[in-house]
Length: 475
Image (tube, rainbow, N blue to C red; front, side, top):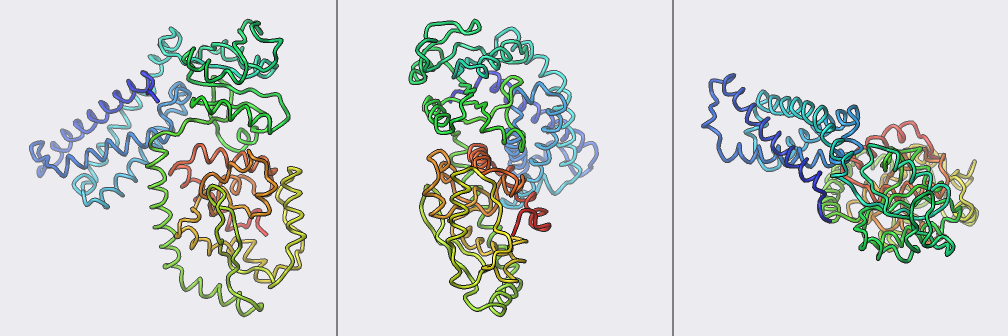
């Protein structure tokens, strides 16, 4: 995808400011330290400064500092900048240690000066000046993105009018699309109906459309996802406003289009396609191996508790659905009696999926052992899944793996949650494990699938800790 001109200019602005901050910091440090001179800058220092550039730009991208909704909100902009500075600093220390580039990080004064100066320059320029320039460019239509809206119903036209009235919006509505034959060629609230849903790829090319908004009144989730899939074929950003996706708005901070909160699908970017999976796998291996080896004595105690309190094996191995629908054996500490019937549970779960119920547990399940009840309450029974993580069958973070009998009754759109590697924890586990309906769980998993990042993974992992400690939603 071609980078929008305003993002390219902002990127150049950021590179220049980081370079200026480093230059000012070197001058200040040479005046402070009698052992440092500007002429002493060597290859190691240059590589260290390159790391400052790289980690800072990546952190700013991760904190969505190139999105206009963030740029135009002073408070949101400032908070995102401080988060980016912290994330960059952590990454800089990590990579300096990894590649043995200690010249920058060994001097706390120099490192502090660099990040303080970056912070000051960015707040002065990005928060106080850039939004004013950006607003002028948007209001004069120098910066704009062509938007196609799917639907001619009340919800579609309401959001179209909101976008037209919003002076901060850089969207130019080129028209509506709908399969209602009576609307074709007509104007709805002054906006022309350009064609049918099947015409979207042609219209996207003809009008140079960069975004598609699906504002759906339909209660049919299958039809909604047929429309979404048709829009995704155009390989453009798709924004979705629908009652089905409202859980994303309630539970997490989602993207805005103008002043409208919308679930967003974006074409996969190069970094998301290659760099993120590599970093995620590296984190999975390091963390899972560290926990398995470091907590081995505790594992032995837990295994002994299982073995000596009920007859049967220590581990329970269940067939589960992994990435792209492939089966694998998922490990757990056994929490049930051997040969316990699963018929009642299977029937309950299938009904929950087909009727869109919440994932409540069976009350006083006689199959669960006394130790197993404690294990389940604290999610201790799932610790052996770290072996699956180490093997690459699971990840630390991702949609929870489903079982074959669950997968076979899911609708096609619900199965999309299985397009990525399943995880030990995920968004809906920390956003009310037993408080969301099944369809809402799937929507939250789809949100993760579309927006997953190392920063989001870390947030989910740290948020999982209190959930596990207090046993919220377990059993």
